[in-house]
Image (cartoon, rainbow, N blue to C red; front, side, top):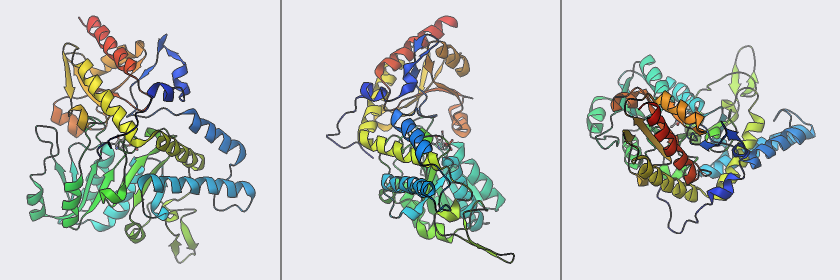
Length: 415
Ligand SMILES: Cc1ncc(COP(=O)(O)O)c(C=O)c1O
């Protein structure tokens, strides 16, 4: 996932003009939006396209024979094809629309894990997982009498793979699940060794790409994973839409996750049969305009270039780590800039992260404070919470300067 040489740099200042959210002042100050890992802002291209879609082409999909139904269906299915191309998936039938990455991961945990895990089996996750790729596996593994195992982080904050042999000796490993980019530390994982190990065990590899897909090229064939989850709202798309990619043969072998309209082939009193992929996993009315909006967001990201976005974030992360380290009493967490996406977590000595974030808000600086849905990691770091500043394609260095100035103001309040 290295940035290719010769990548054309993006111009964040120009791109920023696409995002109407920056046209306002917050508490009388320019907005420094440093919370994109939580949710990204939306460009006018996505907002306008969704308004246009609702204004001219909206109806329910698949089941209508009228013009609007056909337009809406074309919009939804066109977006599915864009997600397929974005992830380099072999087959568009393998793209299942869901609400978000959390739902995608639950779908796999319930439909695959629920029917394939039992006593003697193991699910392996890492200490760096978001709760969305931790809790569903912990729940399903234990419900089915299987082992739930967490690979710890080593002293460098990398996933410690030294215990893999022992896990393989003791259990029949069925699932290995990990993220590609950590939302709390920004760590970019080289998951290759873990994917190979999972497949040597005959296990499936489940990839949480919620934090990777917005920031770098994600290629399901190059990763050689079996399932992969993304969320639209983190990648310039609307909320309420995400996607699960899964290998067709696995999806075909699985039971449905949600049941009802749209996902069936035939319904009789005696027996119901399931629809074809991907509809078997898309019960009920789809998030139609949201899927359409995600497709437009993908066009936007590809237009900017994922390599350029990744390079921009490395640059911002390096700048932020340098500037933040000038602030007295700060502790910075996570790897060096070249191994992280645009995420910097930190704590200020003796000042609760929520107090830091609240005072920063008064300066127009939006950051996240909390456990970032990573309580096992917080436990490892020995803290209840951290502050987190996160960057995206529209982030400019002045916002990081505004953050640093704000932190000096926080220090004064608590002096
Ligand atoms: C790494 C990671 N995985 C999963 C999720 C869950 O995403 P969503 O809340 O969109 O389902 C997040 C959200 O922060 C995340 O950062």
